[in-house]
Length: 279
Ligand SMILES: Nc1nc2c(ncn2[C@@H]2O[C@H](COP(=O)(O)OP(=O)(O)OP(=O)(O)O)[C@@H](O)[C@H]2O)c(=O)[nH]1
Ligand SMILES: [Mg+2]
Image 1: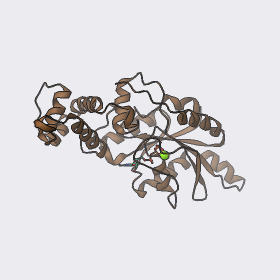
Image 2 (image 1 turned 90 degrees about the horizontal axis):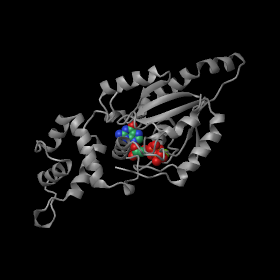
Image 3 (image 1 turned 180 degrees about the vertical axis):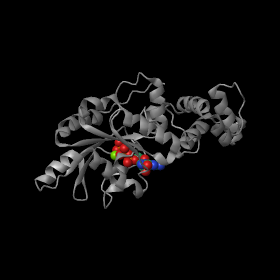
Image 4 (image 1 turned 45 degrees about the vertical axis):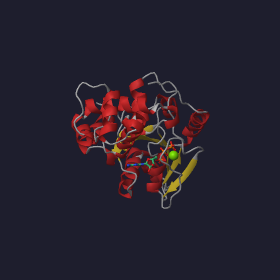
């Protein structure tokens, strides 16, 4: 599955980030915990440079805890800070501030010696729809950043003050223009980081079915019942359509609706709690 999606606003966003990076102490790199590797984007590396980074595995409510712990250990082994969060709940908010302060402890201490309250500024980056704006709102006293259940919601830059010592810069989601890694494209599209309009729904559902069945066969069986073994993903989609009564006139299985259902089921967390990337 090939996807070509790099709208002008993303190129503009990268230019804005390159400009603003000079003014920040840290980068908060928001990853989607369901695709903890595929939600890394090469587009960000030239932006981040040598700034210290906090990886946040967001949407942690959709992933098994044992898996989250493995990925946290992995990212920490790269020398960065890493935590997992559910931005929909406010209870994880203090973890983020604490990690940012830990990352910048030395700077904070130096300023404090001079009697200055250092404001830690962090740029929040990540692929579209990973939850950057929601995460910022979970920290802000009132809802400040615009959010939405589709990629490409945030457009301009926006600084948001959190308490007296932290400021966060919201940024538009960015994807790397080259989707030569098709497996990565499928994972990003399943997680909702690519605009649905540029993706073939049936193809995505078929690829998703193949991927999830291989990773977590019991979860697929639990959701849709036992499907014919050895069937192609398209045949399985037809079977799912029939099992769920999704039929066109004449009893023909409605594969389009089955595809949309499977994609929605995955996004709601009904299909598997395992990440789609493996360590
Ligand atoms: N289940 C779950 N959903 C979340 C979480 N964080 C964000 N979301 C949902 O994910 C969707 C995208 O959230 P946004 O905060 O708009 O994402 P964004 O990264 O700012 O997206 P862009 O601005 O388009 O790049 C929204 O429907 C949120 O409610 C989370 O921790 N768990
Ligand atoms: Mg946003």
